[in-house]
Amino acid sequence: MKLIIAIIQPSKLEAVKAALTEVEVFRLTVMDCQGFGRQKGQTEVYRGHEFAVNLLRKVQLQIAVNEDFVEPTINAVLKGARTGEKGEIGDGKIFVLPLEDCVRIRTGERGSDAI
Image 1 (tube, rainbow, N blue to C red):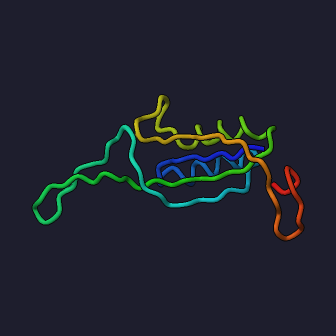
Image 2: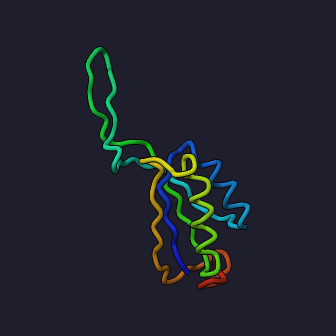
């Protein structure tokens, strides 16, 4: 089992959800978050004064999958979140972490059966 964490642009959420549905990944958690990487924020003007906004709005997806779904899930996120053919700075990141256990609260099932 793996936990896939993807940080993407909010405007790409619907495209990523559609790509995940195509590979039969239907369960995910979505959270609003803020951060920056190579983009290093942006400059905005407020009441005539220019100031730097260091944190940009992003969306974090958490997707728990069994081993067979790891690569299809990664490819679906890449397909939905990438800007254009080659992508652009700010498209996001995908992290793949080992998932030690999963428990379905309703039934008490554990492990890959609970996902």
